[in-house]
Length: 302
Image 1 (cartoon, helix red, strand yellow):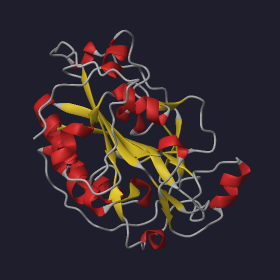
Image 2 (cartoon, helix red, strand yellow):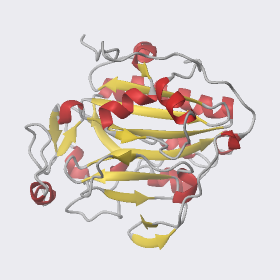
Image 3 (cartoon, one colour):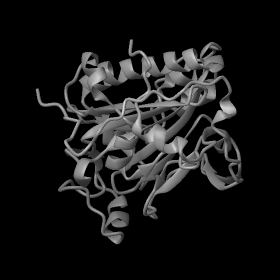
């Protein structure tokens, strides 16, 4: 079985553990302006988005003008009409919310009302027998809210992945993330698909008028049919624990894997930034930002 060899010769993983601290404000939060956001198809000011990203949302350089930013009650994301997937999903998980269990998974997968039907993924797009739809933000992260749990079943929170990855490796990683939220009080999480070298390994779904959007921007992802949902080569997750000033990250290949390999998929946040072209938590001040980028938090993987 060929797995991604994360440790490339050009990369040097710095395993320095950042010094712990007791206060969240040791990483000073940057006030988030009341930006215009899209929430359930309605334009509004501020809303829940400000609390999800106190150090800024993931940032592309250069900016991807064709992408669409959407914010729901428990998570926000940036949707790419070319791949027809969200390129990142941001959420804030707290120990208090996890311990306040009032909601159960609804399994009501459905299109996201924030996107037009001709752009957003539809249920018919996920009829593939080779891949299954996997949630980037797990519904078990939102047990404190029936509404947020339900919103996690929007298809914009779904990407096509190998069943083994979804049901074993990714599930185990999500369990660890929730445990880290309990251990350290809270974590900020960014999850998304990764298209190494700008290519997908496959495509599913129908060709829609989203293809016209892609063609207008001269955007291609490998040789897959434009307008169809692009299957990522890998999936990533970045976790920031502000109370201890540490970060962890993982890149998981989209092929049959087991959770036993999870420690091998651990990388630095900077590694994920290099492969995605994103900057995570861009408003964390230096030199702390650089330390977070180049270190791997020493949290136990259970």
